[in-house]
Length: 528
Image (cartoon, rainbow, N blue to C red; front, top):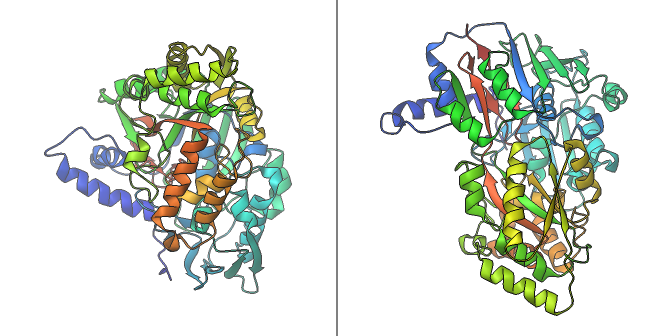
């Protein structure tokens, strides 16, 4: 049972972090985080009003609005919607949000949540247990292609007899049910058709959607009736700027207050300038990887996929592209995950000799390896730089690659539909959540249907094993089996954990971040 706690958990976390940084900076002044941002802003008096001007690389796509597949979508979800619970950045301990407390049955198949009774949607309609049911059923509908669709669909019963409480019944225990409740935005049933058309996004969050000019701008206004208290900002303007250098230039020219899409090299440069803050969001890690379509004849042989894994110069990517804001990996798990295994994580350390031997062995057995397209989003400077390194690495072992940059929306469409012809580079998330979420939910990993078209009974069994039980009941050996299945299949080749960053002018204070990677502006204020 969790106690009722109306204060925002991330606000409390950031205040604690600020106090800690105030001490640690006496001996070390190199940290780059939201806590440092708050420390720098401590001398600026909190002011009401003003509009935060944000630069984003990618526009929203209404049909993909619940996929966290673009930075503009992340701003929209983080600003307009609330979730039932919140994970702080540094743990998987659920904190109250729209749900004030909860109780899980002994057998792990029923969860009762107590809900706030003072929350309204932006339309003025009260929030009730029926809205929880509608939101979960919406996510369970395959038409929305959300990554936690399988978990939402495993919730089979809804007792909404009390407007301010709901009991959920599961088809089986769900080790990642709180992951779902953290990620699930509470959606307004009355405006769902307008949401599909991109005409309205109605939530209970601190900001209200105002307008969307496709390919150009999304605007939000302050929700004066927000249940936590009204935000300081009058509003938010998100400009869609696909050119990262243009974002940096506009930040330097004071035409933008915050940029979400820049290279790590640019963030490194901005961090050395006293006119800017650079925030690094530890706890909201992503992973950059090379994906493989295992139905492509050249990639259907696991030896070729393993050769690619050995040939990836992960350390070079971390040093040159991520500028040190990353960690080389063979498996997706960060070191605080219950699935982390240091030895297994080094399985595919850089080894061109092993890689070349595997390629030669496959070719000797008749495997033909023609030039392979390597697809990646053109707008993001990180992917292009990594693609060039991968291309050079694979050339050294006799695999020729043709770079295939495409628009972000097209790449995501291929990811969801499993339509990549051969190789691709993208980032994924969820490895910093309960490990089962990655294995049964994420587009690249879903054991039942993934972007690589990889199907393996052993992998499916390992994924189901860690999913269909209470989280505290999962044994370490079961996570080891899951990792072993991933390494055996080698259908998705991890490169590095990435630590997300953004940059703002020094007039911006108290930016937050969800574990999902959504910027939070409830506490944000501007000084002049």
